[in-house]
Image (cartoon, rainbow, N blue to C red):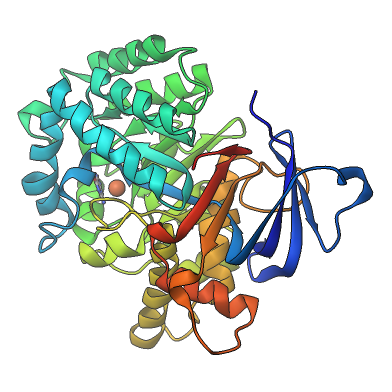
Amino acid sequence: MKEKNFIIKGDICYSKSKDRLSCTEHGYLVCTEGTCRGVFEKVPEAYTGLPVEEYKNAMILPGLYDLHVHAPQYAYAGTGMDLELLEWLNTRTFPEEERYADLGYAQRAYTLFAEKLRESATARACIFATIHRKATEILMDELEKTGMKTMVGKVSMDRNASRGLLEAGPFQAAEEVCRWLEDISGKYKNVQPILTPRFVPSCTEKLLEELGKISRRKKLPVQSHLSENPSEIAWVKELCPWAGSYADVYQHFGLLGAEYAPAVMAHCVYSGESENERKLLKENQVYIAHCPQSNTDLSSGIAPVRKYLEEGMKIGLGTDIAGGHKMSVFQAMAEAIQVSKLRWRLTDSSLVPLKTEEAFYLGTRGGGSFFGKVGSFEPGYEFDVLIISEARLQTPAALTLKERLERIIYLSEDRDILRKYVAGERIF
Ligand code: GUN
Ligand code: FE
């Protein structure tokens, strides 16, 4: 086992709560057995003798968490964002995802994706693959090698897709999920499976029912999309007229998660407009993956994140590649603030814009809790740490730690990351 007992010294910031930062200059961050023991101004006696690595001109932050990203869409990120969701899926997304039937293509594309994720500030992520079982396993193999902790879903879809992306029927689609789970059983230390019905329009009710049964039987978490775009929501109403809301469809089939395995729903741009939906999300402690860049690129709208925070809902950030174009959770923090300002100015002055502390919380502790005790430096949290160089961000101004953190959120790039640790293991 690699050495997991050490101390990092430097300027340290993490989220204490959704609107409070803890910042310590020249602090000591202690790791033993891959677990954080806290931030100290002096090394406590119990830890004297541990090796100390000191960083200057850098900040020490928790890892970032991407609650929603599509690995196969990385190949065309940054193109074709002149469409809204449903047309974008049919003309850009489905044709690209069909290619993952070709395992050679999947290998090339997923190698690039895993390397990009490894280099990024993301420590853990919830990832969609495609319907293809073997290609999904290739993605999991590549991610396992990075040392990062990820949850990966073989996507399920048996209606309303192009022929190459349609599974033969609900039972065959459920059977494919079971075979995939058998194939990977016990194979990985860092990668876990997550059930992934694409969204209601892509899955017959029978398939949703079967996936709900698998989730219960195997105690598996669930990821999907929810209330992203007006046409999508209208379509779900047509497909499931019996449901009290879009979320109620997932709830009906046991796909909104449980104590043992939570669910994460991407977007929830319009969940603020349905009492029924918000109630279900709250009751089931469903995580919302807020994806501001995707919601802008696909003209989906602006999620009322302030309202969700006020109501104590579970929420984190997602990049939603390739609905979003950049795989950066720092950028998602900045954009969460930006879009909240536009919403406040243009449509709803009762929901005040997000502050830096809140956006940082969403990208660290808020989303991190989906994976367990991660995203903070309080004692007992898993040791997920980023060391960000400020060498490129020099200024003659005298900045506080909080201001330096703001500059990192708005201005840093992947190349500024000096070190990344996940659960005490050094990724680079
Ligand atoms: N809804 C169903 N599939 C997708 C997808 O691939 N991306 C986004 N943003 N929304 C979806
Ligand atoms: Fe998505």
